[in-house]
Length: 119
Image (cartoon, rainbow, N blue to C red; front, side):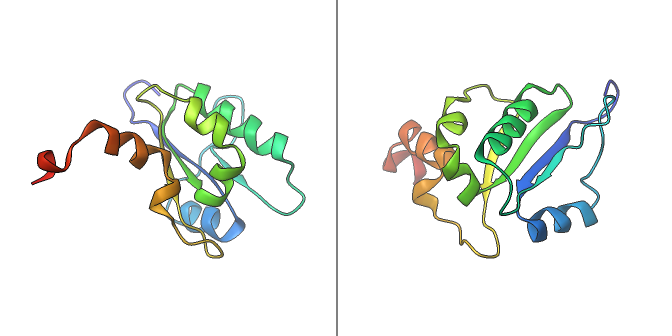
């Protein structure tokens, strides 16, 4: 990764991940592990959380995009992350619209600013 930028990791349903892969996001690390996880009905909660945690610990990942409905399933792991990198961004999926009230990053940001700061 030296001399290159960091990767974007994606955790989501097949349509969401496929869209990002078609956009050129997909890569394998030196251990041949992908930077994405397609979550299907058979995917266990443990696998989702384990993959998410592995993305948090990879040096080559700078941003983790996770469908908000999946972030809700592992909310404890998402909120426990406090380092600036990798940044975690919750995104909508085809079946589940984005709800800003559930986004942990927005909730943290609201605590940093007063309404007067935003004028």
